Every structure is written in C-alpha cells, then in structure tokens.
Length: 318
Image (tube, rainbow, N blue to C red):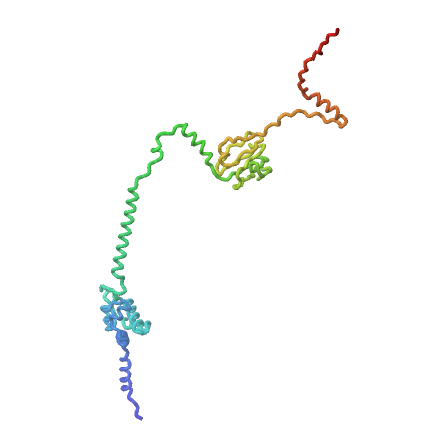
C-alpha cells in the first residue's frame, strides 16, 4: 500500500479547521432551525433588532461595549437553544482584538410594545392622582371656611343672680347617683337593715374597711353610735355627715337622694321616760292588807240624797 504524502495530509486538515463557524453564524443557523425571525428574538430578549443583526454578521463597529455584546449573545443563545457559556467564551475570543468606537451613542429601543404599560392604564393613574389632589384641596378649604366656635365666656356675659344659683346648687347633690359605700375612719359599730325589716349588716368596721350597701336594698337605713367615724360615698361624691359626733343615730336613710340632701336628719335615740316607782312586792300573807289599801285609795262613790223625814200623822185623843 502506498504511503500518503505528508503535504496531502496537511492539505486535508485545513478544511476541517475552516469548518468552524463564527458565533454569529451559529446563532443564525439555530434561529432558522427554530423558524424564528430576528423580530421574534428581539421580542423575547428585549434586545434591539439591529444589534442582533450586527452579532450575526460580526459587525463589531455597530455594537456596544464587549461586556454588553457578550451579554446580548448569551441571551440570544438561550432563546435558540445553544449553550450560553460556550457562546459567550467563543465570542470573547472573537472580539479579543477588536476596538469599539467610544463615541458611539447606543439607543436601546423597546423591543416588545406589548410588554409596556398600556396608555389607558397610565392615563387612568394620572386622572386618579389629579382627582385625589382636588379632593384633598377641597376638604382643606372647607375646613378653613368653617366658623370658629364662640367662646363660652363671651356668650355668658351676665352672671346669674345668687338667688338663682342657690336652687341649682341645692339640687346638684340630690342628682348624685351611684353605689353607697360606708368607709370607717376609726373603729365603729354600725347596723344596716331594711327599714322595718331584716338586717343586712351588723358589726364593727376597722379603719379603712368599707361596706357597700346592696343595690337590691329598697329602703336601707343606718344605725350607729359614732357617726363621725363614718365616711359615706354616693358614687364619686361624698355625702354630708349623718349626725353630730358621739350621738346614736337610727333610721338614717341610705338612699342616694336622701344622703345627698344633707345634713341628714338623724333620729337620735329618745331618752327613756321616767316611770313611777313600783311598790315593793309584798308577801302573800299580806293580801288582805293590799286589798284594804286599794279600797282606801279608790275614790269614794257619791253619796245618794237622804230621803225627806216623814212626819207621822197626828191623832187627837179625847
């Protein structure tokens, strides 16, 4: 078998190296295989169509800086199904000796108008902002136009007569409402009961202890011998004293209206009326003497009128 000439073998290897295509050709072939146009690729990658065409033709003078161009090529490769990193590395080698014009102005135009915000939405947002501003201005102007409230001191120039103020001051305590609470300032014995009825509480309160009259009580009354040691609250108001110091008071009404009328009319305990001394008991043997004394003490019955003396008839004897 004849040996091949080394020069012929070298000539056969040249076409194999020449078959290596550029990045632009690989992208174009892959795009046409997927039946995509440059407009379709531009819509998906949002890269200007003229830059995609320059990458396919290797027109480096009309492309931006290498960093942007390599990024465009990677995105292009991702759309047509090529390896992004391999395309980027190969394009970097192809562009290694290229110089780009630093004064070129890159204009990036919107590739897909469908992805931009609709004009109707933009106009609606602008109108909404205008309406909101107008509404806030109107509310602010309305608040400024409202008349200021007249001070109370200017309207009530004439002071009411003292006589007219007295009934109002007298009626104010009677209007106090709330729970009735008895607080001990010193040790004090007291009894709270229904008037003429059952006892609600009876005992001694130590200083600081309290007793709240049940709200269900209909006519509660107080009895105590030390009214000065009690502080009675009707709600948040303090009732007047229920009696003078060191005086036993009974049947003091604990209803809020009665307590706030003050000073409360406490009923002092009446002094016992003097009674006639009873006679000492006598032994049973002296019963006749007691009856005799009782007869002696009894008033004598009135005497009946004595009948007129009758004169016996006179007879004449012969």
